[in-house]
Image (cartoon, rainbow, N blue to C red; front, side, top):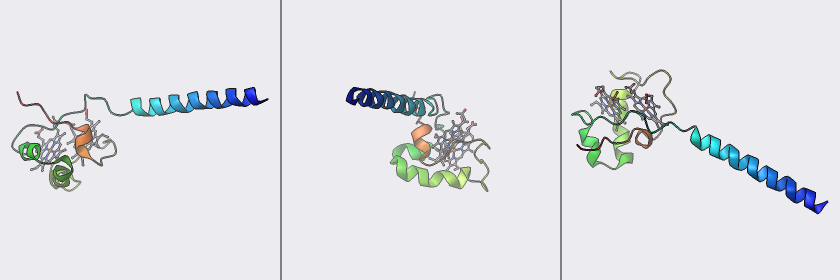
Length: 88
Ligand code: HEC
Ligand code: HEC
């Protein structure tokens, strides 16, 4: 009886592990558009990310000129997804 229980927990462990893995793999791919390196964004390259993110909505908020796409994913912490463009 005890053995059966252990087997059950092992299977549960595997299922939960697989679930977490799938969840992580569903994160947006690295191909997400990067932060442009232009005059509008260059200032944010010299700022801690958390500080920079406070300014995004000035131009990318609903009322601003460059709103996010309709189907934009949850948007807390912009710069976790939109990586900086490497200097060339
Ligand atoms: C001064 C206004 C302004 C601010 C502030 C600003 N943006 Fe932008 N952003 C723009 C404009 C204008 C565009 C569209 C033109 C372009 O592609 O460069 C744009 C485009 C983008 C794009 C798309 C680039 C592409 O290749 O399509 C991303 C991603 C982006 N911004 C992220 C951010 C993030 C993250 C922040 C905050 C750290 C931010 N922006 C702050 C004006 C701004
Ligand atoms: C969970 C990841 C994630 C976060 C957080 C996030 N974005 Fe995005 N963003 C995306 C994805 C994915 C797209 C779809 C465009 C693509 O990559 O093809 C996108 C698209 C955009 C675009 C349009 C780019 C274009 O050319 O179509 C802008 C502008 C943008 N995001 C700005 C922001 C700003 C500003 C924030 C913070 C308020 C933010 N994003 C937070 C993942 C994210």
